[in-house]
Length: 306
Image 1 (cartoon, rainbow, N blue to C red):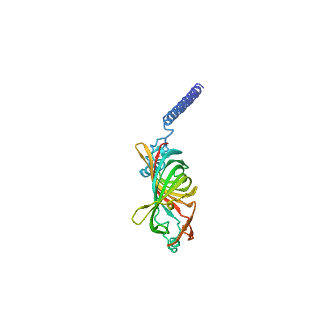
Image 2 (image 1 turned 135 degrees about the horizontal axis):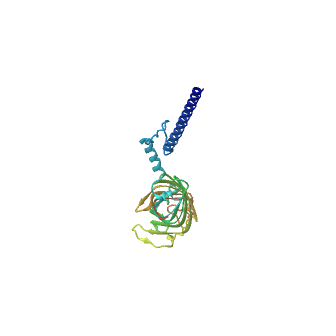
Image 3 (image 1 turned 135 degrees about the vertical axis):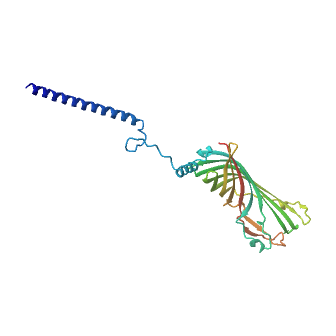
């Protein structure tokens, strides 16, 4: 009986030791898991290789970096001027004028007269303000307000008058306008633009002078040289241009070329009275309708102050 008791005691103690050892192993496992979690917590933003080992991020390929940098450079020029929604500038334009849509010369020559619309040329100068309202990085609306002075001159070869005979005539026309152009501007790249639109001009004043001289170049003083001419009161025109915007000494400027093509007649009184050679005081003149219009080519310079 004693041997059975001691054998049972040894068995119970053995099971207790075994159970304690298992508990100790379980505690060790729990400690190892906590340590592992602590170690891997610092890599919570990093990828691992599936075994708990952190994987270092790979460097972006050079081709991808180049493409990204190119896209970034295209989206911004580095010039804060182009990032504004609205800009304002002074504008100066200087150019030359001519006539288009004039009557055929044959309408005059068949009557034995010189073509009065041949040889017209002149100059123009304008000063004003213009703004740029950006729709997006490539398109903008450009309204303007400016004063324009236009000058046209013509010197005709000798022609016949019934009283003075053959004379040489010099004729000058002057027009002073308030112009309101509105164009749409397209910037395929930041520094280069093309534009197109329309212009409405209000005539603030117009005038003329005419000088006759005889075959010897002597000026003829006569009431016949009085020339009461006036232009139309309002002009509608098409506007086309191209140019560039650039920065110099931390200031921004525009330099470009512009074409203004009038759709409105120049002359308020568009009837030409044509007297054939050897006319007398009682000769009735022929009447030719003259719908001449002005075109202009300008060099334009802008200084952006806002």
